[in-house]
Length: 310
Image (cartoon, rainbow, N blue to C red; front, side):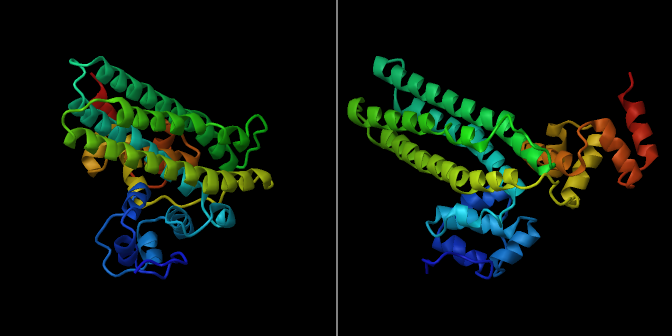
């Protein structure tokens, strides 16, 4: 049964999923897999190395049971950044390309100028989303990383970031209305299906922006207002150590993903976390770290160098 008062760490994760199935997307973006039995939300988060307060803040906000500003002191800014980074991959690599494929099937661009114009409008919208998310990746997230490292940056503020969302949502709303009002369709199944996906994507993007505006921005602003100090150093996870070993052995992100049976996007996220935790950004630096901390043997490094020589 749905809990109107919001969820806590003592609630069972299976009850949360059954009550509100959209939480499956939240779990995916936090890297929480299924198969958790009757364990509580706190237990599942702990096993998945996910900050429980951050997970609950996002869940309760999106389920209409909580306000981000009220819990911004409890959430982990780093966990939120990883969540948003993974969300970008979902929209850009899966959701929007999927809608485009269905849109092409629903409207025959070779037979109708209106169809071609609709597809072009959608492509312009996707380009706008890409620019918006690239801005976050290239400007906002590095700013947050500098704050987590205890650095002050007066040249940027989250107030600038707040003003970036509006046009993205408006353009998708226009596309939806154009298809509904002006596209003459003889077959309804395909077009209605893609319209349903557009409505759903609109809601998903609104939820994504809500997490940014109501949880992420207040949490980062709180961090920026505090005296400069580095966030508590977190230990490397077993997965992060595996990735360091792979990097030291000269594997590319794609090769690491294949070896560890994870996505390339997940590898990139782990490498960002490793760099943030260790403040080491080069393969050479990671090699020294791996040798000093006995993650690899010197003989393995020599063998890798030997094999890479022509």
